[in-house]
Amino acid sequence: MASARSPEHHQPRPRTSSPSGERLPVLEFLGWRQQLKGLGGESSTLDWLLDMAAGISRSRLQSLLLHPSGWVVLRRPRRDLERLWRQHLYEFVPLQYLVGRCFWRTFELEVGPAVLIPRPETEAMIDLALDLLREESKDVGSASEGVPNPLWADLGTGSGCLAMGLAQAFPQSQGLAVDVSTEALDQAQRNLKRSGLEGRVRLLQGDWFQAVKPWWGLLSLVLANPPYIPSEEVHSLHPVVRDYEPLLALDGGEDGLTAIRSLAEQATRAMAPGGWLLLEHHHDQSEQVLALLAQHGLRDGRFHNDLEGHRRFASARVP
Image 1: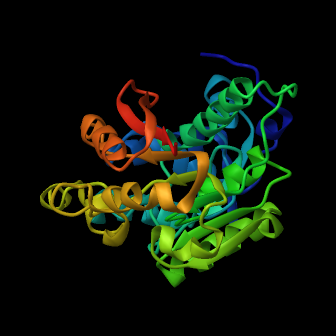
Image 2: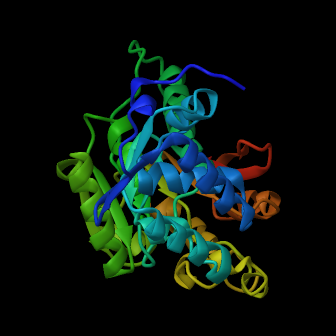
């Protein structure tokens, strides 16, 4: 089929490559992408790799598919990209670890094997926290249309994603981010610095509420995405998760509720009166988590759905 062509096609130039990238005709790039798709895996995952590692955004790729003419410049040579794709397909290494980055809300995060890869569903926790505090403002008859500036804590911060989201959502507030892992705290510090939010978050090493003991009684908002996979289920997870993501961030003990039980037990002593505790949990733990929160004196417990309609989060407040 005849098609309109750019001037570059009338005077073709040799393909060039270098350690930092590669330039090639669009049709050749699309054919190569098709070959990678033939190796297996999801097209959307491959396109994520092309976006994050090669610099070919989803919108750019769509444009190339609709108008396959001209040239394309890859940020990395094809041989490197194919090696990463094969590592993911055949060794189950998470692409986020291979590339060293991922997107989460409005942030581009640095990630590595020391931290859990931030999931899209966890993004909803920031919006839920905002909703809870807006609701609180209305309950007390606040004249402000905004939300208060709470002293907040992110317990088990990992990459720092929730702490960054909270710092962005409450720009006048100061927050605390806790992790037992020094490697995770190093990762969180790099992400906070990269985002320009490091001055608004204090990083602390320790175990859940114990790490913030000097602030007990002052915390108005606490978020946690603790390990919640029952120990027996960890072994049946997909190898891309089981073999590479930190067990410390996955294994929730025999019933998956070890960390959540500890958080519920200490919340009424550690948090300010009226303070909100918001937790992520396993999709089938909703009733158990709400029962634990009520058992330990928290009120107004409720569940919240994730993007797929699963009961993924639970919130309750200190009397």
